[in-house]
Image 1 (tube, rainbow, N blue to C red):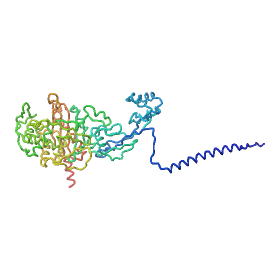
Image 2: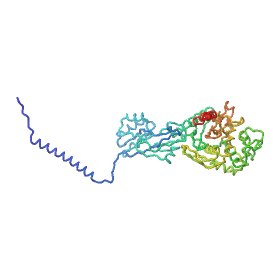
Image 3: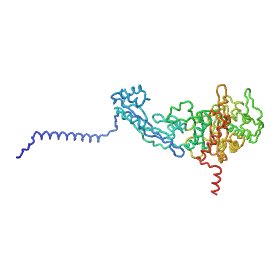
Image 4: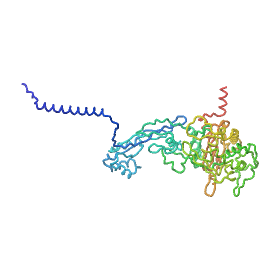
Length: 550
């Protein structure tokens, strides 16, 4: 039995036709509009954005002299909010405060409660685990943006030199500030890598670590309150290592404001004691007012009114300039300086750069403190390292010039690779005389630096023990013990400087706090440790290598 098939009515066909024509008309209108817009010249494109642009900065990498990474940018999530999209402000604040207790609840409410704003930072530079915790809260109006964050693989090892950056990744101190001011950084959206070439340091991380380790061991061994040291190329002025203890973590810039965290190498000025006798003898030799063989009668103290200058360990006999240096005679140094005269002394120290401020790429170097009156008494005390305060960086650069043949060097923390011939400060003969004295002070059984000797490396150096000024005068039991050295002494390549602040007497130091018993042996251990890293072979190995070559 067949079933009848219903036939669509004409009205249904008409309705379908009308709908089809309407849809086709709409598509045609859209097409016409698109063609019209493509033919109209537009000189301005307007973009409406609900989110203000929050700019950050991309920075170049920093490498040590061997190409090892010292500082770089990594991409990290930062948390922001669109206040207009927040549904329950109280819930958002409660949950964020539970996640980040260090946030300011009042400030958070103020910034997120303003619904006219479309962008507000909440927390910058989150760890992945922190970001995941916020994501899991599922709060409307919160979002993340990837940003560059500065990280320092070497930690606090180079903190005083590198400095630090602010929350926008802009340099706020040290070398990071120098990069902003001189090399440039890039404003970026997101975490785009820097297109600026890496910055190459003169610092060697291996030598830096060795210096830091020896100074830290010295802090414990001699119960000192602080320490500082550097290694400098005497030809280029490059700082191969520079350490100030306590260290500064560049990822914790708030530490820079803490007491005792200053960079003792460049921002602290100190009376450095008998290491200044290097400069006194150099001045007199270069001015032809003395010779290494000239004799001075140092048996009597020097008296200036109520002030008496004497020797810690009087020799009890007249001394040649060599012996004045070896025995570290204050009286002898004073007599040499008086003979040269105050004007010559002032001019010589000024020529060495010790009477004016300076700066390196790591920041300004503190200006020295000079006497207001520079008479005979001041001339004598400055001759043996009291009455004029300067920085270890200033002093080291001056001594480097006396070691390298007489040419000025400018301290730098950036790699130079080649020597820069600076202004001649002293003659080659004066430089040779200073090298002889420094080596003799280490090899002589009476030399104050004999505990710095290292077999095969031909070390030379000078001690300095300076009493620290305090209320009512100098403190006899609070000193800065320093030792400046160079190696190999026949053709110096590197200078080392070590200072211990307020070391204490011990059985090892025979109840004394002088530099010959603490700073000098620290220097010896340091040179033995770092010389191989600097490609300086011991004398015997050098001779054997020469024999094999022949």
